[in-house]
Every structure is written in C-alpha cells, then in structure tokens.
Amino acid sequence: MHAFKDSGHIFRLVAVFVVGIILFLVIRGFLVPKSFGEYGHYRGNAMAEAAARPINFAGHETCETCHVDVLDKKKDGKHAHVNCEACHGPLAKHADDPASVQPAKLDTAVLCVKCHEANAAKPKSFPQVASADHSTGLACDTCHQPHSPAITDGGTK
Amino acid sequence: MSITRRHMLLLLPAAAVAWKYVLAGSPESSPNYTMSQHWWSMLIDLPKCIGCGNCVRACQSENDVPDGYFRTWVERYHRTDYDIENPHVDSPDGAKEGFPPTKEAGGENFFVPKLCNHCADSPCTQVCPVGATFISPDGVVLIDKTYCLGCRYCIQACPYGCRFLNPKTATAEKCTLCYHRITKGLTTACCEACPTGARQLADLKNPNDPIHEFLKTHSVQILKPYMATHAKVFYFGLDGSVR
Image 1 (cartoon, rainbow over the protein chains, first blue to last red):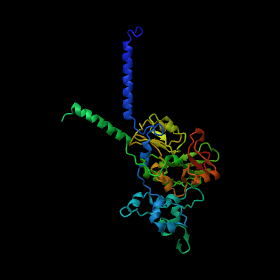
Image 2 (cartoon, rainbow over the protein chains, first blue to last red):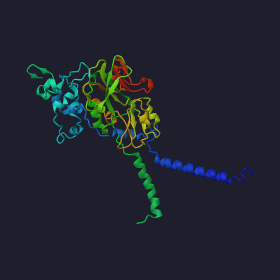
Image 3 (cartoon, chains in turn purple, cyan):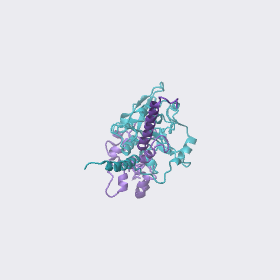
Image 4 (tube, rainbow over the protein chains, first blue to last red):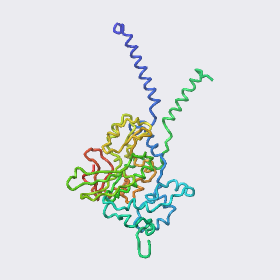
C-alpha cells in the first residue's frame, strides 16, 4: 500500500463528495414532482391543471338545447351564424342553473353599434351605419328584431 | 406538549408523504380527451374581422386577464400606398371597447387580431430556465404557474409580444388557447364570441376539420415567417405590412 501512503485526506474528500451526491439525489427525489418529465422537461400534471379551469362561455350548442325557438327565428336571418354569447355575454352559470341565474336584458342602443357603427377600417361588405344619422338615438330594436334583423314589408321578419 | 425524538421520527415520513401529495396536486382530468390525437391551431379570416373587440372582452372574462393586459388583442392598421414598410398601427386598450372612427386618408385600413401563435418551434419555451413553459403534446404552448419564477425571459423571447407578467401572481401569462375549453370539446372563448367567424379554432390532426379544405383552397400566411417559429395561427388575407 505504498502508493496510498499519506493519501487519507483524498479518501475523506471522496467520502464527502459521495455523501453530498447521495444527499442531493435524495433531496431531488423529494422536491421534483412525480409528473415532471412525463412528456418532456416540464410537469405533466400542469396540463390537467390548466384543463381543470371552469368555463365561462357555455357554447352555443348548450344554449340551443333549450332555446330552440330562438334558433328558429335566427336560422334564415343575417345573424344565423352569430353565436348566442357573442351578444348575450358569457352565460355558463345560467346554463348550469337556469332558474336562479337570469341573463341581463340587453340594451340594443349600445349593443348593436359595437359591431355596426360605421368605420372605414371595417370590410366594405359588412353592414354599417352612422348610428347618429341612422336612428337618432332610438334603440335598434324599435325597428329591427335582433335575432333576424332584416326589415321586410310589414315589419320585421 | 414537547416533541420527543420518537415523535419526530414518526412525523418525518408523514410530512414527506404529505409534501409528495402537495407537489402532485389533484388535477381533474378530462374524460374522452387524448392529447396525442390533436394538434391545435387557429385560422384568422382577416377580411371578416370588423374590429368589434368581442374576442378581447370574451378572453378577459373567460380567463380573468387583469385590466390593461391582453392574451388577445386587435390592431388597426393604416398603410399608405407609398410606404408599405411603415404602417400606422393602433390598438386603444387592446380594442377592448372597439375602435374610434377611422380617418379616411387614402391607403388601406384594416384590423388584425393577434394572439399567441402557439408555435411548433416556439422561442419562448426554449429559453425557460425551469421548465415552466412548454409545448403540450397537443400543440398548445402553456405555462405551469406553480413552476414559473417570473424571470421574464420568455416575455422577451416571444417575437410576437404575446406574453406578459401577471402583476398579481408575478408569473408569466399568455393565451392558453382556452385549454380548459378545447379539452372539453368546446371552442375557445374568442371564437365563440366572434360574431363574424373571423376566428376559427382548428385541429390539424382531425381529418374532418374544415381547416384542411380551407388551406387547400386559400393562400394563408403566418406572422413573421422569417423567424422560423412554425406558428400555427394562420392568417387569410394578410397584408404585407403586418408585423
């Protein structure tokens, strides 16, 4: 054992390193979440957590399960492809509990112009009006029926 | 009561088990959803966009986005016929309340909705030092809030300016493509609220998705293709001045 003469300090150093590495691995095993690295260098559970968020917009298919009458009114009109919650706002709570959560009544005087106020940047084919000239402050639903807004002879369609 | 050595030895493994549970969380898995069967993207049909801001409002309500920050927003471009390189762009409050009247001063005016492009080679996920942001197996760039340190590297790395630091949680935030909705078979809040169909969620792995027919018959463009991000938000009718 001549070669290892006076080398005790090296072995002690190696022992310290080995203990350190084992400690590191043990602590790491405790601190790194189980799902980390399941799909890549991230926590696999993060996706399920993102997916667990509650929804706010119910989706038009949910609305249509009850409000078939509105669907009938809409189907031939210009607004056939406008989803319910585009105007009525997020109503998942109403869909969950229709009796106690009632959607607010909409004010067409402020709602319609959000889309239909004339603006030079809007596509030319989109129906636009300068509301001040067009209706002089009257609510749009005085003449137009919002679910099918075209005006035909003898009132709204 | 003082804790003896015996109690301590009993408590330690119990604490370890509890800690393991805390780290694992209790995620709610979506039934009937297999990540490997989807590759999400979005189609923006620009000639249909009317700049109403419905998407911005829908996103803020669906995702609790703090005021003054945006996961999606709409820009109004004005480019003259003489200087295509330097369009004038504005987006008052992200177009949350729509746009004021546009001056007709020649050239072209149009709206461009923006959101995270959910790049297949995203620069933002590559710079995260802790693995807090990643591309999910179904092609959505997500952030793990519990892992994010708030170092802001990803915010600087995104060439599209789609990320911000949430002032309340001090973690990076961005569009999740409404991951909580698309995994339940719903469309995103912005697509649901868009009155003209200018935004359409698309699943590139679904052979029956109308996106395939659209891509066959239309010329689409992505934003900043020279960044080689392989963005998955496709714009139809995109003007060359849009950055």
